[in-house]
Structures are given as C-alpha cells and as structure tokens.
Image 1 (cartoon, rainbow, N blue to C red):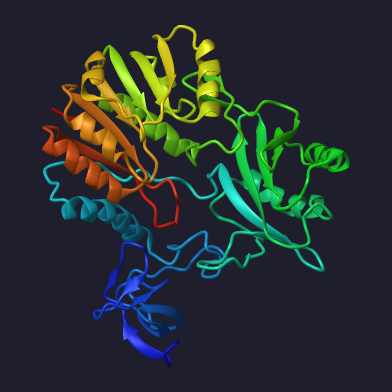
Image 2 (image 1 turned 120 degrees about the horizontal axis):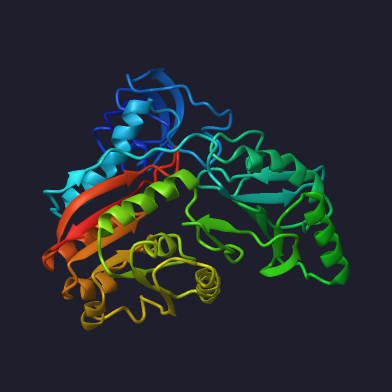
Length: 410
C-alpha cells in the first residue's frame, strides 16, 4: 500500500543506485544531499519532486531517463558517478575483510559505444512499440533516442518498427537481440507462439535483406545469413553463435584483454576458464600455450574454428567442460603456470575452492559482479593467494553494474 507523499533527505547512494535516507528508505534517481518529495510502498519510494538538489546532481542527457529501465545513474555528476562505481567494489571487498590490494583507476567508456542491446517489442492496434522496458515493469518505453548503444544500432530502431509491421504476434512481447559485429549486425528475434513455416521464413528472410543484417536468427533458427557475423581478437576472426555472450563495449573488451595479459605475465602455459568464444584465449595465445575450458557447445565450436586460423601463435587446446558440474581439480592445475577465470554473475565458488588448493602461483579473474568476486577472492586468499590489484571497468555506462579485472599471486 502506497503511503501519502512526504519530504525526505537523501544521505547516501545504495549499492543498487537508489538514494537512501537515514532511516533506511530508498528513492531512485536521487543523490546524497537531495531533499525530495516521494511516496513509499514499504521502504521503496517513488520520486515525485526534487525540492532541493544535492551538490552531485546533474542533468540527464537522455529524454527517456527516469522512465526507461536501461539507465539508473544519468542524474549523477561525472566525478561522483565514477567514485561511486569504484566504491561498490571497495565495499564488497571490505565486507569480506579483503584488504591490502591496489585499486587501479576506473576504465571508462564513451557514450554510444555499446555494441549489444536486447530490446522488447509489442504490436499494438496502431503500430509497434519498441524499446527497453521500464524499471521493474514489463511496460515498453517506445525508444526515440539512446545515449548508450552504438549509433548504428540506434539508427536501426525506426527501421525495425517499419520492417516488423505484420510480423509480430498480436499478443505477448517479443525480444530483439542486436549485436554489432565487424561484418554487420547480428539479430536474434524471439516470437512467442509463432511457427516459422515456409511463407513466414521467406518473409523474415526478406526482412533481413531489407535491414542489411549479417544474420537473422528467429526462435533459435537461422533464417537468413548474408555474412558470417565475426569479431576479431588478436588478429583472428571468430564467428560467435547467435546470442553468444560477448563483452558489451569494444574499448572495454580491449582494456580487459590488456589487463589479463599483464596479469598473466611471462608464462608458458595458461588455463582459460569460462572461455566463451575466445575473448581472452586468442590474445593469451600470443604469449603462451592456452587450454580453454567452456561448457557451451556452440561457443566451443566457434573457438575451435577460430583457433584453426590462429597462425603464428602458441598452441591452443579447447575442451568442452561444465566447470560448475566438473571443475578443474587441484592436481589438474599442475599443468599450468597461470589461470584466467571469467565466470558469469554467479561467480565460480566451487572452482575457486579447488583453485585455492592448487599449487599454481598466478590467477587473473574477470568479474561482472563485485559481490560474488569478493566471495571468491576471499576463498583464494584463504588458500594462500594474495590479491595484488583490482582494475575497475565501467563497461555498462550509467547502469549500476561495474566490472573488474583482478590479479592474484602466491
């Protein structure tokens, strides 16, 4: 039940990016020092009016901010925004009593540089509504501009509305995945309850041609491919499967690759865990023999094919292995001088339990979740590793997420 509106003072910014009052209430889109009027449902508030702005409030650049759920922090001044991102990592590590490391400067990305986006679309009586969903809602914000995604993806949105007319089901929301690759836009389309029969397949193939897509995959089935979508890592082209996990911003990816190589140092053999399609495998192969472990069969196939063309590099071995169900055991690490881990948001708890008991002397972890990273870092430290440095990466501009690359040594 929503309470009557009242005035509150914001004194801090919580780890989810919402302003926090002294008595534990949360109001989104506020900054410390704000005095605001808000209404509350329990401890969660809805901002009605900023009565007196705090010193770190800024004017959001996007007209959709505050409605669109894609961004949460456009209202922060640049300096405070960057400090907050780094502090999220510091606090997560402090909660696990992890100290004594060097915090490197925050790596930032430019606006309109994200190469991946997942949009929602719905056919209404009049037209197609297409954009990101509102925060905490399935309602779609009809996107007119976006200051995060690459301009080439932004420019495709009005074309998509026109091209998808008549192709979307009359009920339910559809999901559109867009990835900008070196050879064109790779698009996935989820049409719930729609059978991709012959006529519809033909229509969708024409749609792909009209939009100049490299590839169109609908309900998991490739219906058109003009070019194999490809990305270039360490001079080697890899064609990722539709919907594959990829780093969101090319400049952030390059910074991560550099940090990983620096963290590994001069070694002969490296284990690349949760390798995906080879984001780190291929750069690592320029300096050491690499064994890549990945659970997804399509990603493994893509990496193997890319490795076939990795001329002039150290040997690359690719093994399909689910590291959650069958992690590498301590004795298996004896074959390696260093380990690289890039786990999903859940982290790598079981794998780190075994790594902590291994004799390998160097580990580099890439993480998109400071909380699970801090947990896993504590495990490695308790096993004899020392956390030397943490490099924060602000890959998801104006979102509450922050990523990092960390170096551990025995």
